[in-house]
Image (cartoon, rainbow, N blue to C red; front, side, top):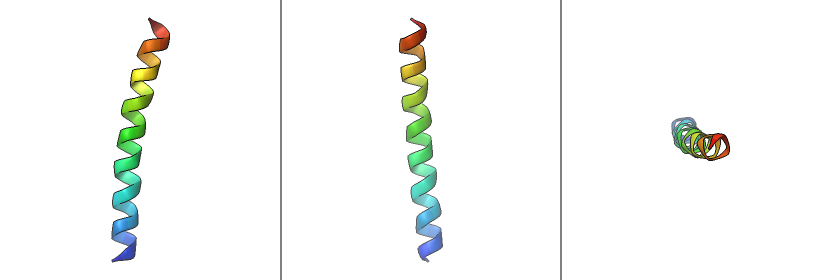
Length: 30
């Protein structure tokens, strides 16, 4: 159970990080 929650947290944080990274990357390129 703990492992599943841990993986879920990592995935959600990873997706959020990617979105923020794309936003900052676009902002820098502009």
